[in-house]
Length: 338
Ligand code: EPU
Image 1 (tube, protein in one colour):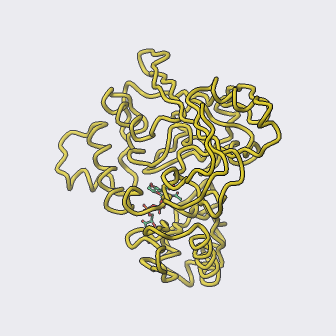
Image 2: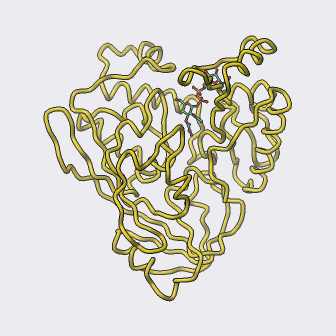
Image 3: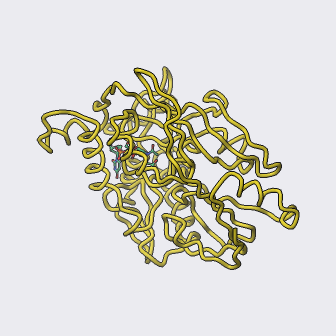
């Protein structure tokens, strides 16, 4: 392992933001991670873990040892008539795993096609799309402690998954590096096509037989039509979470804004699409120099090339203030600010 100095992180974050790591090292295995984490020379030096970089906003240089885990490998570890269990290295590209599962007829993550990021980052924020969340297919998560290099296996319950949340983003924030995940996929698929535009898109694509492949293709088609490709325009997907408000607050909102959409969450909360709130506040397609709000999805902030993390942070605060002023709802960020 080679420790480099003053390394640009621009190609390691999907926003494409410039930020320099004072020191940088890539670890290809759990053993390599353990070596770095127990190295006496780096004992008291601050460490920063940078995974797939698909959910962060880099607002400054990182004055730390940046560790970039890149552990690969997809291995079938168990199967029965109904399920197959895959052990997946945290550094596997998420969409590659989806494509592998679709080709192998393993069901469960086809609705999560084309989400940027890695298989290891996925549980961190319980990625989700089109009616499926990653928590639905996770068996266990393996991680290594940043302070002690102790390896630990987290059960599903211990991960404490919530909407775009897990223990790794909350109580154990900055304490563990996810190194691998065991996913449990279905050999007897249950298709999940009721959500959003999937059914309509399958019809438009003249699909006669619904299959993992055709669902995946439909999701790819929907995402490509709405969401910017990070390889072309820097972004981190949804910038904010969809707020969940009390039913009573939603009713009041509906009185003033009769077209406001909302989806019930449990018995007394309503989830309101942040994209709608931001669009209604007039931000959709807004551009300010090198940054802006995507023209087809108001929940996505974009970097057209030379924007900075600070610029995006300031824009996100303006959006929060304006949405709060108009609707009385304070949006909270889904991306992690650094
Ligand atoms: N909407 C607007 N204007 C917009 C965007 C959205 O009015 O510019 C309204 C529409 O009413 C639309 C509704 O918002 O029907 C929902 O929009 P969309 O289906 O695009 O989904 P979303 O709620 O904006 C969430 C996830 C996405 C995921 C999609 C599809 C969050 C924060 N985001 O977005 O996840 O792909 O659903 O399931 O929950 C991500 O987390 O990075 C991400 C991309």
